[in-house]
Length: 384
Image (tube, rainbow, N blue to C red; front, side, top):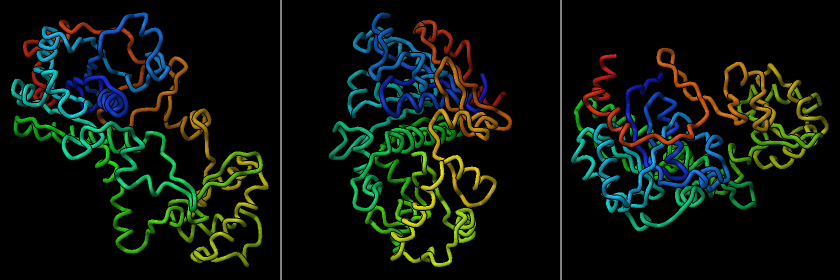
C-alpha cells in the first residue's frame, strides 16, 4: 500500500459515469476502496459489462475491491452497514431518495458513524426542479451553459465525450470535496454530506470565462474567441498526410517563432491582432501547413517556443519519448492505463495494476475493517 490516502477506507455503491472514476482516484492515492455491486452470475460477468468490456479492461476499477451485496436483502444490507461503520467515506450516485429507501441514507449511516464523509454524486444535485431527472454528461454540460461554447463558428456544439461532466466537473470535483471533508473530520471528529452535482462542477470550471465575459473579452458567439478555435493561431490544422497539428501560438513572441518556422515570407500577412482578417490569416496558415506531413512539421518546430504539437492518437501518445520518460501510460494486459496524477515526493501513488476480477467476502471485509483489528483512519495517518 502506498499513497497519501493510505489508511483511508472508502465504500462506494457501483454505478456508471463519475462514481467509478472517483473510486479509482481514491485507490490511486492509496485508499482502501470497496465497490458494492449487485450479485450476478459468473457467466454473466464473463460476458462483460454493459459497455462491452471485460472486468480486466475496465481501467476505472483498478485498485478497487468488489463485493456482491443484494441491497434488497435486509440481512445483507445490515452487514454492509457494519462495513460502513468502519469506513471513512461512503460514495453513492443514485437519484435523490434512492439511498434512503435502501436504508443507506446519510441520516442512517452518519447516525451510526458520526465521522463518516458521505458523498452524493449526481447530475443536478439533491434538490431543485431537475434533481430527480435522468441525464448524462452531455445534458449536464448543456445545463451549465458550457456546451454552447464548444463549437466552431456556424457549427453545432460538440460534446466533449464524457470527460467534462462525468470526470472533470463530477468525479474530480467530488474527490476534492471528500478530501476537504476528511481533513475537517480529522480536526473536528464530525463527518458531513458532500453534495456534488455535475452541473455545478462544470459551471465552476468556467470561472475564468465568466471574468472574461464581464470584461467584454469573451463573446457568447462560439468560434469567435481566442481559445475556442476563433483565433487562427490557436487551432488545429490538417497536414499533407491527413494528420493534424495543434497550434497554440497565443503570445506575440511565440507567434513570431511560429511564423518563422513556416519558412515563407509573411511580411504581408494580416497582423495577429486584426480580428477582421482572421479568416484570411487562417487560410494562409492552412495553406502552408497543408504542404507537409504532420511529423515533418513536428520536426521543424521541435525544441522551439512556437507552441506547436502533433495531434497524437492514444497509441502514439503512449510511445511518445516525453510521455515514455515520464511514464504517462502503462500497458497492462493489453490495456493502456494512464498513470496516477499528480505525483508525490514522499508518498507516491499506487502503481497501476489490472482490476481485480475476484469478489471479496463481505463478512471477511467487516472483520478486516473492525475497530479491533485496525484503528480509525485519521489516527492511523497521524501515527504513521
